[in-house]
Amino acid sequence: MTERVADANAWRSDRVFLALSFAGLALRIAFAVWTDSFNRFLADDLLYLQKAEEWRQTGVLETGALERPPGYFGFLYLLSFLTGTGPTWHVFAKVIQAIAGAAAAVPVYALGDRIAGRTAGRIATGLYVFDPTMIAYCGMLWPETLYTLLTMIVFWRTSLLEPGQIARPVALGVLTGLAMLLKPAIGAFTILLAISWLFRFGWSGAIRLSLVFATATALVLAPWVVRNQLRYGPSVLLENEGAYNLWMSSHPGEPREVFDMWHRLPDPVARARVGTERGWKGIVDDPAGWLRRSAVRGLNLWGLEWFITRNLALEAWGKIDVSAFLRWFWVLQLAYIPLLLAAAAGLRESWRDRHMKLLLSWMLVFTGVVAGLVATTRFRMPLHGLLAVLGGVGLTGLAGRRLRLADGVAVATAIVLLGLSFQRPLFQRITSGELRHVSQLDESRWVFFWY
Figure 1: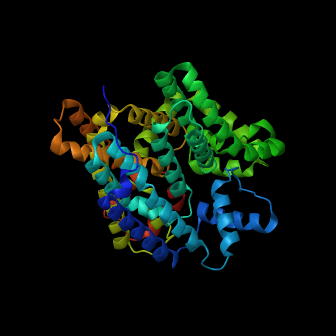
Figure 2: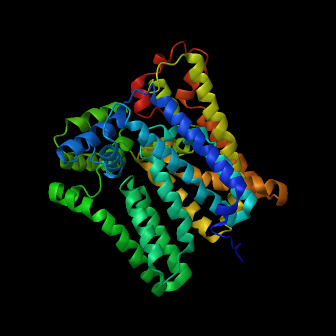
Figure 3: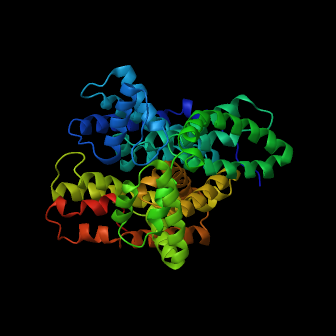
């Protein structure tokens, strides 16, 4: 099959794309500044703020009960070093995140253009920059926005790599390392990437390209890995969240029980060891139960949005009455539904592109890994850009491409997934009409993944 050749820099001269991107940037900055005026930091965003400030004051980074990668702490540390830590310094972090969130539209456009042309790139850009969930994430002190930008650049620019290049694979290896210091999950993508190079370039080309790319990535990770080895030994490489998630995923009781037991363990090494042991023991003792829960988690990963709604329910953005809460709730759901259906319509055509086939394979692998551990829609955020690309291809094809049975099957599957998603006990409780006050939503179940 002859693939379409697209200009990787076409976005620079496309006025429609630039207008969409600047509109998305304005919305993100407006939301970040507006919510910051009444933001009540809690859970992870409070932890990131506190630990980054402690790092600046003491010179030592401690990441709390979970040993986490240092990337987002480092981002806040650097920002506090440049701006100081006045009462509103974190608004600058949100503005930078808004810029990063809008900048991710460039690879979204480029991938859409690569697969189905300029119109697909523009539609994909619109789906991405006006997505209310992605806008909301720019106003939260969580690593997803920065991680999404880095991973989308890696997803896009790796399609342009060839054996014999040095500068490009080094730059992308560095970006991959930085992304892994935010969230290590993209590390598994590099394995699929190396396999794809083997099929494209043979052993010699794949090895040359992989060595350059992997060396650059390893050099970025090395300081944190060495620090962990000196402090904890082989039990903790980049983080110990994997052990926690494994334990949580295989525990048949309330998630709060794992949370409490984890925090009673004395140190990161004990937590990594006990979490791994009990996680695997839970799977071995009840594989059917673990598989059943994993199937539900996999469906929920791509189901309707609730993680931003969780912030509203916990009043992270101030007091909210039931009517306002329900309006936000439905805005998030009714934005995601057409995105998922459009993405399903673009699935078959996108699979025909060699590089997009790699990215779609990664999405499948990622779904399986996350479903087997712990999954919420938060983990889907870095892949929203790819959903937008698929959606751009799908909506473009409705006008100019002959639809086939496979397209209908994909859309029907998405509809079934949405229907199952809406059967969550959480959603049923919200939409039953019995909600009289937002505080009726049990906080522990919001924080600890009510499926």
